Structures are given as C-alpha cells and as structure tokens.
Amino acid sequence: MIKFKTFKLDNGMEVIHHRDPNTSLAVVNLLYKVGSRNEDPSQTGIAHLFEHLMFSGSKHAPDFDLPLQEAGGENNAFTNTDITNYYNMLPADNIDTALWLEADRMADLSLTEDNVSIQKKVVIEEFQETCLNKPYGDSWHHVCEMSYSQYPYKWPTIGYKPSHVETVTRENALKFYADYYQPRNAVLSIASPYDHDSIIKRVNHWFGDIEGKQVDINLPLEKKLGDHFISKQVYGKVSAQHLFLIFPMPDRLHPNYYQYDLLSDILGYGKSSRLIARLIMSKSIFSSLSAYITGTMGPGLFIVEGRLLDGVSIDTARSAIWKELNLLCDEVISEKELQKVKNKAISSMKFGDVSLLNRAMNLAYYGSLGKPDMMNQEDENYDAVTSAHLIDVANKLFKENPHRELIYSPQS
Image (cartoon, rainbow, N blue to C red; front, top):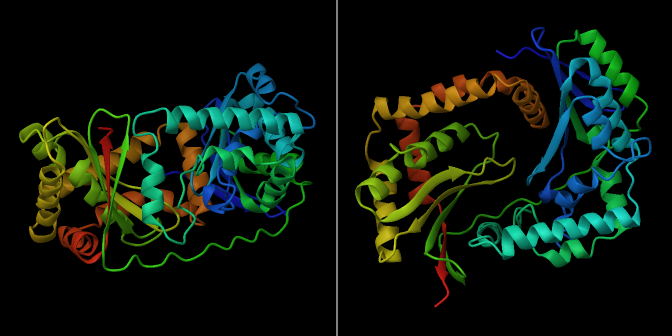
C-alpha cells in the first residue's frame, strides 16, 4: 500500500505527498488537467505544442533544464487526450530547485513571439516524422475520426493536421496558458523522504501566491453510433495490409473498466494470449497482432489490430479474429486463464510501484480522476473480476455494440 496525504492550497491547487523515508531522492510531478480534448477543433495540437512551450523558460529561469541539471536532476513530460504531465527527479536535498522551477513557469512562462514560433516548427517537424513520413503513421487519425462523432477525441494528441499548429498565435498561446495552466487545474504530487509538514511549508512558499481561478470545462456528450458498422480503406506507402477492429467502451471510471482491460489481455497480451497463440504462432495469419483499450477519461475504445502476412486476404484475417471474439462470448473462460491475466496485471502494478517516479506520477493521475485512493484499490478491483463478468462484457462489446473497421493497404 502506498501511503500518502493530501491537502489543498488556498488558490485551489491539489497536493499529494507520499513519504518514503528510505529514499535519498525526490520526485516533483505536476499534472495539468488539460489535453487534446480541451482544444478548439479548428486549432488542434495546441496542448502538445504547449508541452514544448513549457520548456522555453520563465521569468526567473530563462533555461528550465540547466538549473535542474546543476542540481543533479532530470525531467520530462508527456501529453495525451486528457492530461499534460511534467515530472522532475533529483536529490532530495535539492527539492526546492524543482519546486521553484515549476512554480515559476506556472506563474510567469516566457511566451514570446520567438518562443512560440520556434516550438511550432519543432512540433510540425515531429508531425511530419511520426505521422506523414512514417509507415502507418496516420492510422490513429483515421481511427479517431471514425470512432467519435461529437466528443473531442476525433483527432490524435499531435493534432488533426500541421496547419492547425501553424495557425497558433502568441495570443492563442497566452489564452490557453491563462485558461489551463494555473493552480485550480493542477495536481502536484511529491514523493520524498521529508515529513508532511515540511512539504506543506515548501509548497506554500513556492506556489501559495500564484492566483487561481475557476476552470470551466464543458465537453460534449458522445452520441451512440447506431446499429451499423463503418468500414474504411486507406492506402499508403506500407509493406503489408493492416486491419483495425474498433469497438466503443466506457470511460476509465466506469465500474466495468477492469473487465474490459482483462478481456483485452486474454485476447492479445503476451505470447500465450488467444490471438497471438492461435493466429500467429499456430495458423500464421498475422505477423503482429494485439488487443488493447485506450483507458481514456472520456468514452474509450477497445481495439484489435493486426498486420497481415503476405498472401493472406482481409476476409481470412477478419474471419479468424471474429471467430476468437465470438468464442469469448459463448464459452466459459477457465479459472487458470483468468488468473493468469489477473496476475500479470497486478504484478505489473506492483513492480511499477517500486519506482519512486512511478508512485508520484500515478498519484497525480489518480488525483486528476478525483480518486487518489484508487491507486491502492486496483489489485482488488482486478481480482474481483469473474469469468461470468467477462462473458457478459464480451457479449455487450462484440455482439450488441456497433463497431468500426479500418483497412490500411499498400498503394498498388
């Protein structure tokens, strides 16, 4: 069990502190509750752009990385559909360096014309490399667009197209910063050897004077997809056909989330999973195959995707996958098979908790969900899933729900 205490500053910032008396390190993790779903549909990619802008320097620290490196620390960040997360790990004696740096860029980020222009070029180049010039690189663009009609997951985190990032102005960046990069929209998690009172004092010193304001986030509800499925075929400079089957599923806080997660593991996690063992190792239909869930805070997706071997038709590949999906709907899943995926899920979490950084990041994530206690309840939630639960979810997922199909083929 990960022990922690929570408190809230007067400006509204949520703080979670985990004390580990056996470490000589400290982690300062600052999560902002903003991701690509908070973007204007005509200017996508700005959340990811802002992750880059946050390293452009601030009023008292023109170079963010240098003071942290001099303090013996390291840092990084990531953006997804729902959050943007910044983390710093350094010797505990120098924890104030990380707190100062994060507080300074929350209060006084250097959003100059030059900084915005430079980071726009960096992000557009990244878009070109990872999406436009990489085989299958734009797959997620098609998957998102097919899967959502209203909810702002209709584009990937990097943005819908490079021109959206190109149109971002300094004024756009300043507004985005003012709206989302402030205390009431942040969760600060700290893992350190210090006592709780010491952390409260330090956090109040560095962040207490930053003004917090109300954050209004209004996201549209996703419409039901109807009772029909949509199939789309796209072509690109790729070597083999790739098939995606996409099913809508509930959000991360839905009580059945754990059932969907374990169902995806039974299908496609590890060499002994059903899809890999039967359709790669045994029948040689796919060169790669997986099943996974997106786990988003909004309406999620359950995805089965695989790359076909040469000479295998889409009809053969599709039928082989559907045979396995239908088996999950009709047959009893053995206790041995279920326990195997439970053990993998629980052991993965336990091994992850060994890392001080992972503990801090996970506390911030669960804090952003409004339920930091969930971090210590996950093993029980997975362990409570039964075979009957999985069969019920499989029937709802594969038989009752509409689905999408994307076929990515080589250009003729």
